[in-house]
Length: 182
Image 1 (cartoon, helix red, strand yellow):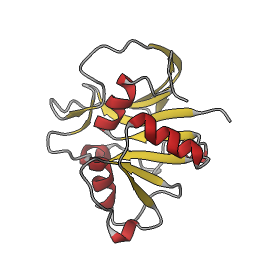
Image 2 (cartoon, helix red, strand yellow):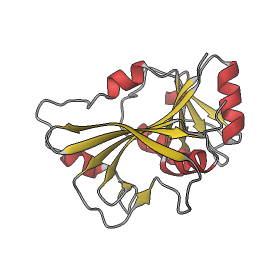
Image 3 (tube, one colour):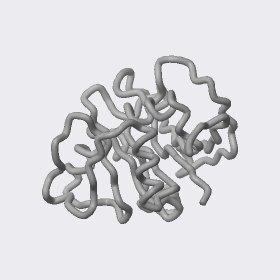
Image 4 (cartoon, helix red, strand yellow):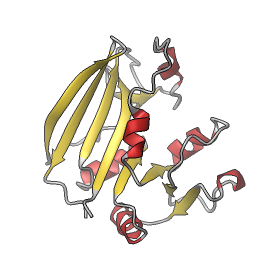
């Protein structure tokens, strides 16, 4: 089975995925009268499971309604357990990035969605990302949470496609070459 670790995210023009308070409320200000999901449902149909960082999981828990129909694996060294309302939907994993990938492959999950700023940075640095789908929103936050690491990556990143969504957003699809994912 072919494996693929994918990042799918929205960023501001200045490269932030959350504002200085960790909020993503700025995304709800996008003019989207038809309530398009911008291809997210099609993307989700192609993945087996989600690997998510603790902060992203906590953000998702604030939505009130669980948004995923795929198993979510929360990678955290600090959480002792997940909230009861996530039982059967999310699972706590205390392992390295490489170990969690190996564990999920053993469970039959080969196409993974990697979600969360710090987690994405760690996976990129360790060359565990195969593709990036990045939607750039025409807003400047000035400061906040970045998803790219502060140091150079030694992987070649190749642009596969670009499209304009809602007449204002730019979606870029990249392949990360020289990845060492399993």
